Amino acid sequence: MDIETTVADGVMEFTLNRPAKKNALTEAMYLAMLEGFAKAEADDGIGAVLIRAKGDVFSAGNDIGDFVAAVQKGQGLAAADFVRKLASFPKPLVAAVNGLAVGVGCTLLLHCDLVFASDAARFSLPFVDLGLPPEAGSSLLLPRRIGLARASAMLLLAEPMDAREAKEAGLVNGVVADDELAGVAREKARRLASKPRAALMDSRRLLRGDSSEISARMEEEFKAFLAALHSPQTQAVFAAFLGKNK
Image 1 (cartoon, rainbow, N blue to C red):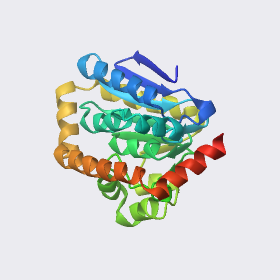
Image 2: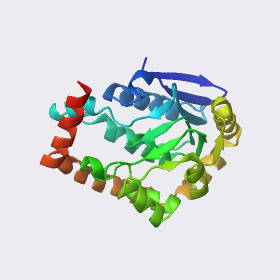
Image 3: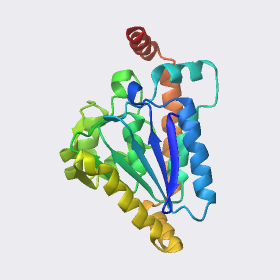
Protein backbone atom coordinates (compact mmCIF):
# COMPACT_ATOMS: atom_id res chain seq x y z
CA MET A 1 0.00 0.00 0.00
CA ASP A 2 1.33 3.44 -0.94
CA ILE A 3 -0.52 4.88 2.07
CA GLU A 4 -0.40 2.92 5.31
CA THR A 5 -3.12 3.93 7.74
CA THR A 6 -2.99 2.90 11.39
CA VAL A 7 -4.78 4.00 14.56
CA ALA A 8 -3.29 3.86 18.06
CA ASP A 9 -3.75 5.88 21.26
CA GLY A 10 -6.32 8.17 19.66
CA VAL A 11 -4.08 9.05 16.70
CA MET A 12 -4.65 8.13 13.07
CA GLU A 13 -1.33 7.87 11.28
CA PHE A 14 -0.81 8.16 7.54
CA THR A 15 2.54 6.83 6.35
CA LEU A 16 3.57 7.68 2.79
CA ASN A 17 5.00 4.39 1.59
CA ARG A 18 6.30 4.96 -1.92
CA PRO A 19 9.99 5.58 -1.21
CA ALA A 20 11.17 4.28 -4.59
CA LYS A 21 9.28 7.22 -6.16
CA LYS A 22 10.32 9.70 -3.46
CA ASN A 23 6.81 9.44 -2.01
CA ALA A 24 5.40 11.45 -4.92
CA LEU A 25 1.65 11.64 -4.39
CA THR A 26 -0.81 9.98 -6.78
CA GLU A 27 -4.58 10.23 -7.13
CA ALA A 28 -4.88 6.87 -5.37
CA MET A 29 -2.80 8.12 -2.43
CA TYR A 30 -4.88 11.28 -2.11
CA LEU A 31 -8.07 9.22 -2.19
CA ALA A 32 -6.74 6.89 0.50
CA MET A 33 -5.98 9.82 2.79
CA LEU A 34 -9.34 11.45 2.06
CA GLU A 35 -11.02 8.21 3.13
CA GLY A 36 -8.93 8.21 6.28
CA PHE A 37 -9.78 11.83 7.07
CA ALA A 38 -13.50 11.05 6.74
CA LYS A 39 -13.16 8.17 9.20
CA ALA A 40 -11.07 10.24 11.61
CA GLU A 41 -13.56 13.10 11.55
CA ALA A 42 -16.48 10.76 12.29
CA ASP A 43 -14.71 8.78 15.02
CA ASP A 44 -14.82 10.42 18.45
CA GLY A 45 -12.03 8.11 19.53
CA ILE A 46 -9.57 9.78 17.16
CA GLY A 47 -8.22 13.07 18.41
CA ALA A 48 -5.38 13.82 16.00
CA VAL A 49 -3.85 12.81 12.66
CA LEU A 50 -0.14 12.34 12.04
CA ILE A 51 1.42 12.39 8.55
CA ARG A 52 4.86 10.83 8.11
CA ALA A 53 6.82 8.98 5.44
CA LYS A 54 9.10 6.01 4.87
CA GLY A 55 12.47 6.37 3.21
CA ASP A 56 14.73 9.43 3.13
CA VAL A 57 12.30 11.78 1.33
CA PHE A 58 9.09 13.07 2.91
CA SER A 59 7.44 13.80 -0.44
CA ALA A 60 8.55 15.02 -3.85
CA GLY A 61 5.08 16.53 -4.31
CA ASN A 62 2.65 15.49 -7.00
CA ASP A 63 3.53 12.55 -9.21
CA ILE A 64 3.59 14.60 -12.40
CA GLY A 65 2.79 11.71 -14.75
CA ASP A 66 -0.16 10.62 -12.65
CA PHE A 67 -1.31 14.22 -12.25
CA VAL A 68 -1.13 14.99 -15.99
CA ALA A 69 -3.06 11.80 -16.76
CA ALA A 70 -5.81 12.80 -14.32
CA VAL A 71 -6.07 16.28 -15.84
CA GLN A 72 -6.23 14.86 -19.36
CA LYS A 73 -9.05 12.53 -18.33
CA GLY A 74 -10.97 15.51 -16.98
CA GLN A 75 -11.40 13.84 -13.63
CA GLY A 76 -12.16 15.73 -10.45
CA LEU A 77 -8.67 16.13 -9.06
CA ALA A 78 -8.23 14.32 -5.76
CA ALA A 79 -5.24 16.58 -5.08
CA ALA A 80 -7.55 19.59 -4.90
CA ASP A 81 -10.01 17.74 -2.68
CA PHE A 82 -7.14 16.72 -0.42
CA VAL A 83 -5.91 20.27 0.21
CA ARG A 84 -9.48 21.46 0.73
CA LYS A 85 -9.88 18.78 3.38
CA LEU A 86 -6.64 19.83 5.05
CA ALA A 87 -8.10 23.31 5.42
CA SER A 88 -11.47 22.15 6.75
CA PHE A 89 -10.44 19.16 8.90
CA PRO A 90 -11.42 20.06 12.49
CA LYS A 91 -8.95 17.95 14.46
CA PRO A 92 -5.24 18.62 15.06
CA LEU A 93 -2.76 17.68 12.34
CA VAL A 94 0.86 16.79 13.04
CA ALA A 95 3.63 16.13 10.49
CA ALA A 96 7.01 14.44 10.74
CA VAL A 97 9.24 15.56 7.87
CA ASN A 98 12.16 13.18 7.38
CA GLY A 99 13.75 14.63 4.26
CA LEU A 100 12.94 16.61 1.15
CA ALA A 101 9.46 18.19 1.14
CA VAL A 102 8.59 19.61 -2.29
CA GLY A 103 5.47 21.30 -3.66
CA VAL A 104 2.35 19.95 -2.00
CA GLY A 105 4.68 17.93 0.24
CA CYS A 106 5.62 21.31 1.69
CA THR A 107 2.37 23.30 1.39
CA LEU A 108 0.40 20.64 3.26
CA LEU A 109 2.54 21.49 6.29
CA LEU A 110 0.98 24.96 6.43
CA HIS A 111 -2.26 23.29 7.49
CA CYS A 112 -0.61 21.30 10.27
CA ASP A 113 -0.69 22.48 13.85
CA LEU A 114 2.67 20.95 14.74
CA VAL A 115 5.52 20.11 12.35
CA PHE A 116 8.72 18.32 13.33
CA ALA A 117 11.66 17.82 11.01
CA SER A 118 14.82 15.77 10.88
CA ASP A 119 18.19 17.42 10.40
CA ALA A 120 18.06 16.32 6.75
CA ALA A 121 14.72 18.00 6.03
CA ARG A 122 14.64 20.50 3.18
CA PHE A 123 11.64 22.51 2.03
CA SER A 124 11.13 23.57 -1.58
CA LEU A 125 8.32 25.30 -3.50
CA PRO A 126 9.34 25.31 -7.20
CA PHE A 127 5.91 26.20 -8.60
CA VAL A 128 7.06 29.24 -10.60
CA ASP A 129 9.88 27.21 -12.17
CA LEU A 130 7.20 24.77 -13.40
CA GLY A 131 5.16 27.65 -14.82
CA LEU A 132 2.58 27.34 -12.06
CA PRO A 133 1.19 29.56 -9.31
CA PRO A 134 1.22 28.32 -5.69
CA GLU A 135 -1.52 26.10 -4.30
CA ALA A 136 -3.10 24.84 -1.05
CA GLY A 137 -3.56 28.39 0.22
CA SER A 138 0.21 28.87 0.42
CA SER A 139 0.13 32.37 -1.09
CA LEU A 140 -1.84 33.42 1.99
CA LEU A 141 -0.56 31.07 4.68
CA LEU A 142 3.19 31.06 3.97
CA PRO A 143 3.73 34.84 4.44
CA ARG A 144 1.66 34.65 7.62
CA ARG A 145 3.81 31.79 8.87
CA ILE A 146 7.32 32.91 7.96
CA GLY A 147 7.00 36.53 6.80
CA LEU A 148 6.73 38.09 3.37
CA ALA A 149 10.47 38.28 2.65
CA ARG A 150 11.11 34.60 3.30
CA ALA A 151 7.90 33.57 1.55
CA SER A 152 8.89 35.58 -1.53
CA ALA A 153 12.26 33.86 -1.66
CA MET A 154 10.61 30.45 -1.46
CA LEU A 155 7.70 31.08 -3.84
CA LEU A 156 9.16 33.55 -6.36
CA LEU A 157 12.82 32.53 -6.45
CA ALA A 158 12.09 28.89 -5.55
CA GLU A 159 14.90 29.03 -3.01
CA PRO A 160 14.81 26.00 -0.67
CA MET A 161 14.98 26.20 3.10
CA ASP A 162 16.85 23.74 5.29
CA ALA A 163 15.66 22.39 8.61
CA ARG A 164 17.47 24.90 10.80
CA GLU A 165 16.25 27.83 8.70
CA ALA A 166 12.72 26.42 8.84
CA LYS A 167 12.88 26.24 12.63
CA GLU A 168 14.17 29.80 12.86
CA ALA A 169 11.46 31.03 10.45
CA GLY A 170 8.66 29.25 12.31
CA LEU A 171 7.78 26.79 9.55
CA VAL A 172 8.53 23.87 11.88
CA ASN A 173 8.23 23.48 15.64
CA GLY A 174 11.38 21.50 16.19
CA VAL A 175 14.34 19.76 14.56
CA VAL A 176 15.32 16.35 15.91
CA ALA A 177 17.60 13.49 14.95
CA ASP A 178 16.22 11.28 12.20
CA ASP A 179 15.98 8.22 14.43
CA GLU A 180 13.98 10.19 17.01
CA LEU A 181 11.61 11.93 14.59
CA ALA A 182 8.74 9.45 14.47
CA GLY A 183 8.76 8.99 18.24
CA VAL A 184 8.72 12.73 18.96
CA ALA A 185 5.89 13.37 16.47
CA ARG A 186 3.83 10.45 17.82
CA GLU A 187 4.27 11.62 21.40
CA LYS A 188 3.08 15.13 20.52
CA ALA A 189 0.10 13.75 18.55
CA ARG A 190 -0.86 11.50 21.46
CA ARG A 191 -0.67 14.43 23.87
CA LEU A 192 -3.03 16.39 21.65
CA ALA A 193 -5.43 13.44 21.37
CA SER A 194 -5.51 13.03 25.16
CA LYS A 195 -6.65 16.58 25.88
CA PRO A 196 -10.30 17.65 26.45
CA ARG A 197 -11.65 17.38 22.92
CA ALA A 198 -14.10 20.32 22.79
CA ALA A 199 -11.62 22.78 24.33
CA LEU A 200 -8.85 21.58 22.02
CA MET A 201 -10.92 21.89 18.86
CA ASP A 202 -12.34 25.29 19.86
CA SER A 203 -8.84 26.56 20.61
CA ARG A 204 -7.57 25.26 17.29
CA ARG A 205 -10.46 26.88 15.39
CA LEU A 206 -9.84 30.23 17.07
CA LEU A 207 -6.09 30.06 16.42
CA ARG A 208 -6.61 29.37 12.73
CA GLY A 209 -9.02 32.26 12.21
CA ASP A 210 -11.49 32.76 9.38
CA SER A 211 -11.63 29.53 7.40
CA SER A 212 -13.64 31.15 4.61
CA GLU A 213 -10.69 33.43 3.79
CA ILE A 214 -8.40 30.43 3.41
CA SER A 215 -10.96 28.54 1.32
CA ALA A 216 -11.48 31.54 -0.96
CA ARG A 217 -7.73 31.91 -1.53
CA MET A 218 -7.38 28.19 -2.26
CA GLU A 219 -10.11 28.38 -4.91
CA GLU A 220 -8.49 31.47 -6.46
CA GLU A 221 -5.15 29.65 -6.60
CA PHE A 222 -6.78 26.52 -8.02
CA LYS A 223 -8.42 28.49 -10.83
CA ALA A 224 -5.08 30.08 -11.75
CA PHE A 225 -3.34 26.70 -11.39
CA LEU A 226 -5.71 25.00 -13.86
CA ALA A 227 -5.29 27.83 -16.34
CA ALA A 228 -1.51 27.60 -16.07
CA LEU A 229 -1.57 23.85 -16.67
CA HIS A 230 -2.74 24.49 -20.22
CA SER A 231 -0.10 27.12 -21.00
CA PRO A 232 2.55 26.16 -23.58
CA GLN A 233 5.36 26.91 -21.14
CA THR A 234 4.04 24.60 -18.41
CA GLN A 235 3.18 21.86 -20.88
CA ALA A 236 6.73 22.04 -22.23
CA VAL A 237 8.18 21.74 -18.72
CA PHE A 238 5.98 18.76 -17.93
CA ALA A 239 6.75 17.09 -21.28
CA ALA A 240 10.48 17.48 -20.69
CA PHE A 241 10.15 16.04 -17.19
CA LEU A 242 8.11 13.06 -18.35
CA GLY A 243 10.43 12.43 -21.28
CA LYS A 244 13.45 12.49 -18.95
CA ASN A 245 11.79 9.98 -16.60
CA LYS A 246 11.01 7.61 -19.46
